[in-house]
Image (tube, rainbow, N blue to C red; front, side, top):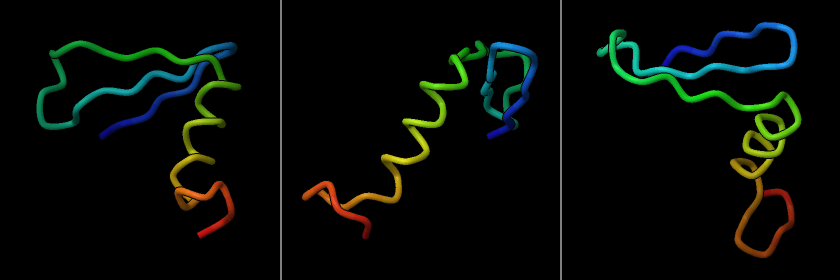
Length: 46
């Protein structure tokens, strides 16, 4: 996975298939996504 940042957008793509589709997130949504990776199912930090 490759992550690129530009003003107002965070782009994500598959590094093994660089010509495939790119996902775009707002910085706020990207931050929320990353935060969710560190929480357990109870909503508390893992």
